[in-house]
Amino acid sequence: MLSVGIKEVQIIQWFVEPGARVEQFSKICEVQSDKAAVEITSRFDGVIKKLHYEAEDMAQVGKALCDIDVLSDISPEDEAALGSTPEQAGSPSAPQQPQKAAEKHQSGKEQEPQPLDVQTGNKQSSLATPAVRGLLKTLDVDINSVIGTGKDGRVLKEDVQKFADARSTASFTSPPSSSSAPSDSTLTQTETPITLSPIQSQMFKTMTRSLSIPHFTYADELDITALSRLRTQLNNTLPTTIKDDNQTPTPPKLTYLPFIIKSLSLALTSFPLLNARVSNSSSPSSKPSLILRSSHNIGVAMDTPQGLLVPNIKHVQTLSILEIAAEVARLHALALASKLTAADLAGGTVTVTNIGSIGGTYLGPIIASENEVAILGVGRKRVVPAFADDDTDADAKVVRKEVMTFSWSADHRVVDGATVARCAEVVRGFVERPEGMVVRLR
Image 1 (cartoon, rainbow, N blue to C red):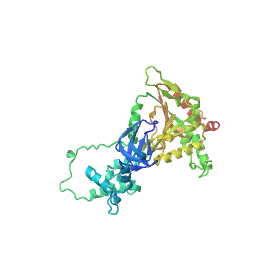
Image 2: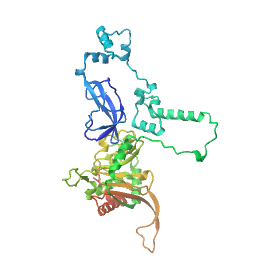
Image 3: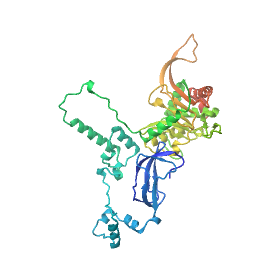
Image 4: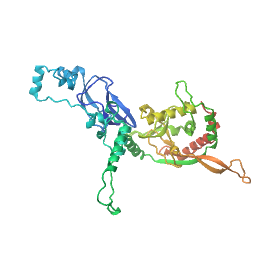
């Protein structure tokens, strides 16, 4: 059965088929749940009797994935059949018992075993991770046409790329057509449908639900010159390999993101409304309410080969900037390897999206989670000329400043614009004068 913590999952691949014998903790299938790939294992010793879903189907919570006959319910005939391999069944040195052979002959239900062959597009050749399946869709390659070189015939990225390169080479070396090249007037538009990946499917549903949230957007430009100097000084003093009590390596260089996350957490202490969630029961008699939360579990939007993932850093209010940086690095490494757990993705209270690390100055971030009421988007760092703050009009001096745009979005059903603006000003104070942040660290 599926966990009650999720609503639905997509079946990525089956590791078993009807008639297969399994033991406790044997792998049954791989599913995509909410943006995390999970392998489902068997809870019993027995025989697979029926699969309720095909690969790529959506499975609902509370519905069985497959039927398993436990060993105590298996007949002696089934036990004997499962204990023999196809080679043993067809070997002259393994004769059948006369009575059983006669029964099978009379019933007419005897079937020849069907061996799996990697090169003929069988089940083993369809084994692949979600990242590989995404590459298959991008290159428009049928997985059954690719020979897998991984464990148990698993298709690897190298296999897909090699197949695509060979296909391209074949198309380039094909003899040219005797007809002349078509003119522009004869070219037609070609539309190729592409199935959404599991993460894209979840994004489609999540963003569609977010349309019911009226967004209030607020943006401002922050001077990060002092923060930039502090960050450089800290990076010059930090060793390149630091380990905490758990022997977990920390990132060798601090980025701006840990400072921004800590500034947001300090501001949430004064503005707990932005760390709350809306409780809106479906019952017509109940009224919507707000649930305030004590822990600041700040989500960080991450761009990965599989798509957008938003793991969160737990209890940021208790962490130092160095600890936040180490946690960001840990989550990012897991996201790139498709190894984030459900615990890493669940429980977020507010989100930071650092799109500026890729590019872009201004953005309108979208609240994707129904359990959050605010999100902060950070633009790229820019160097601009500006007047020095301590100069008078008489002796105004132009200086070099580093600036960054912070764009906020809030659920306007429960958060007014003034609250967002006041919280943003507190964050500005910590970012532009980081010494105020340091004295408040725990």
